[in-house]
Image (cartoon, one colour):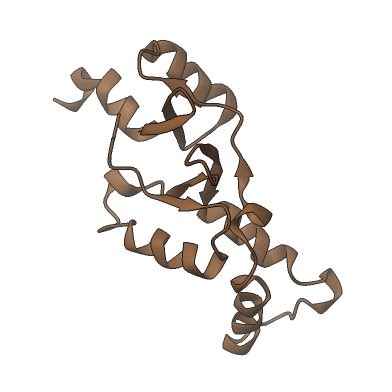
Length: 148
């Protein structure tokens, strides 16, 4: 479990979230291969996940199908960004119904990753986020003998 968890308020704007997401992406190594932010509510409790995929979906959804150019240029992408920049994180995030506790069985956590195809699962104590488990890091922990 990683305890240094990047979080964002569900009331933050998507433009702000992109900056936090990029700042937390790191050096693009395999350890940071699943960039995303834990979204918290006004009580500081888990509300959801904001991932690169979630934001890409919001960008694509902001353009009507009949307005998509065959060869998009920089101005088109600027328009996409403008379309979602001021939206609230809560409007585009994935509402996270699944989390685990600190004492979760790792095989059960692995099963959640496989069944739900998540990149990350928040770890909670009560309703507060205390950490995060990344799919790739769990794999490396479970399959250490394959790394030699």
